Length: 130
Image: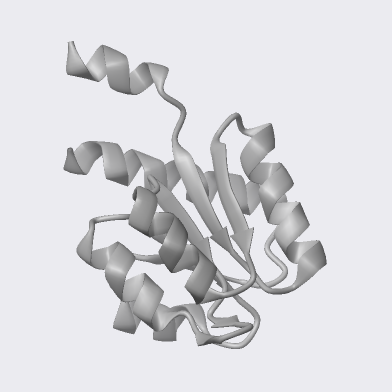
């Protein structure tokens, strides 16, 4: 049964964040929840390479990476139906919702319990789409 097989696999979460300490914190939160971590990546180029090998179940993206704005990556993930959590200190949540209505957005620093709730919400939305 496909649903039983899906429930046995752990969701994969892509993390794109160029600030080392924040990337480490996000990564630890993802792993502590029992999810598979893809990354963290400090730039879009490496993240694009990763999604070329397989799409994640969810993505946490900083808006500004070492190689510029994350929007081309966000567009590719959105087209593939991957839920996105934007995690930025430079762009408002309202601005992100206008550009990506299905995305979740939060400002840095985001309390871990809030991030956990957003991850669960994003992964639940992913399940309901399939």
